[in-house]
Length: 356
Image (tube, rainbow, N blue to C red; front, side, top):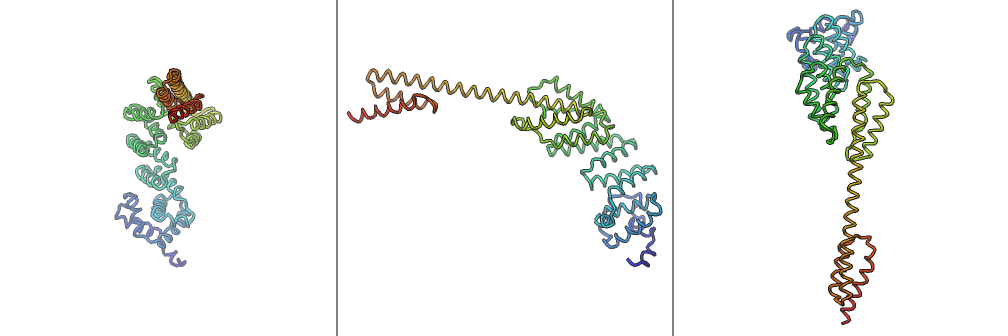
């Protein structure tokens, strides 16, 4: 763009072009619809020119919410232009939402943060900022529904651990949500060992509710610790090594963080894993004992058949003896001490029969 073009590009004209001459309601129109139109109708080159003009104007008046909003709309519509001008869309969007909230334009601030959450779905802090705006505007029910939607998305992907924080937030806002309490109980049922009693489950829910009531006030440190627990692989309740690895990692987390809100939950899980590990070991021992008993029964049966064969041999009933010896070999385990001897006896009886 030439210097003369830049001089004649009035910032008001830029704003009018972005908002289609206020046909869509200007800064009060639907933000998502405005972003979609700008992305389709405004080319990359023009978007770059508009961005530079808005940046020059904002350098003189950084608190102009209309100009900053126009810049953010351009950023949503043409993110590559924002990157080329070294502008962070998330930062500018956050700054805009704060300005809008100061002007008591809570709904517009919410629109900005909702679009940012869609663009950066992994940025948990954006969700928390959006929650703050909704909460301060007094729309608690809408916030609860948003949290419930997030939890249900994780339910659909069978990500139960990721659904729990959203349910905790709901309980912190409204302890009378029985449907959420049932969801929590369902998650607890799947994660807990089936041998735990109903009393243990109720105790978990009580602790869970107490922790949930405090979650709204948790700061950055609490979130970081929660994220750290999510990086630990989930234990396979049928694999002793898998459970031992998770118990070790969780115990290390408890040792590193002596005071944090999720400590009781992790201690409970460690206890559950210890119980599950002990149960698995007992089941393995029982299976081994059953197998040993089966082998002993085979030896007993084989020995009985061998003795019957010997009795028949003593009476000169070689056909019966042979049948009993063969039956003993079929019944006996592979490591039976009489196997080799009986094979020789059978061969000898066969030889006797062929020689007659």
